[in-house]
Amino acid sequence: MAGHSKWANIQHRKGRQDAVRAKLFSKLSKEITVAAKMGDPDPEKNPRLRLVVKQAKSQSMPNDNIDRAIKKAIGGEGEDYEEVRYEGYGPNGVAVIVEAMTDNRNRTASNVRSTFTKNGGNLGETGSVGFMFERKGEVVYPADVGDADTVMMAAIEAGAEDVESSEDGHTIWCADTDLNDVSNALEAELGESESTKLVWKPTTTTEMDFEGMEKLMKLIDALEDDDDVQRVTTNFEASDEVMAQLAAE
Image (spheres, rainbow, N blue to C red):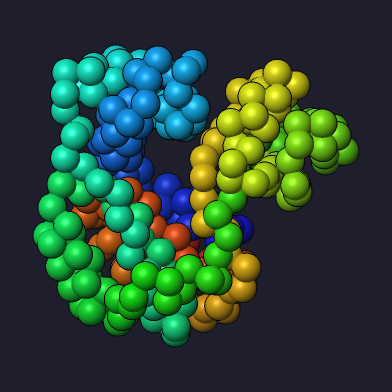
């Protein structure tokens, strides 16, 4: 997943942040509405909703937006949305998982398929690349929350599986079903996280060169621009040199 934090930095440097943030808020609102519709509209009684609200707050989404999204669910909106997952291959055979929330499966499938085709990829069957990923809980803290040992001890106490610490921060991994409990225990020990979410963690990666990464960036951007697409995950690995070249463009 290191590639994805580097990827976010490039998007930031390229000045796409405002557009990305507006779209992110809209996608999080949809997710909050659906989570509130599926369970209790009180985040304290609905772990899935609590995690999405936590993620929204970590992205500085205003409380008014969060409350509005929950009220939509109480008012009966969000009934038509269903979650769908698409799997395929991008440039250089990199694996791509696309998670979407849609009220029209045909429209979304058609858009996703055409985006893959136009950007040098191929949409595959469900399961065609999923075996290269594991469903995991991911909790991210900034580097200044503590040194690697402090965070490791807190993670062990919380029931996490693994910790990756670097100068960019600490990423704590846990079983997908344990995310709510682990994130609560970490919050009590380390404070509010930067990000708490369920992710697809690659078990194998595909090394990308500069040209391949340029093509992959176009594919990811095009997929993320689709209003139905919630998130895109790939198993790319790229050297610091390649990422620096992309950032400098």
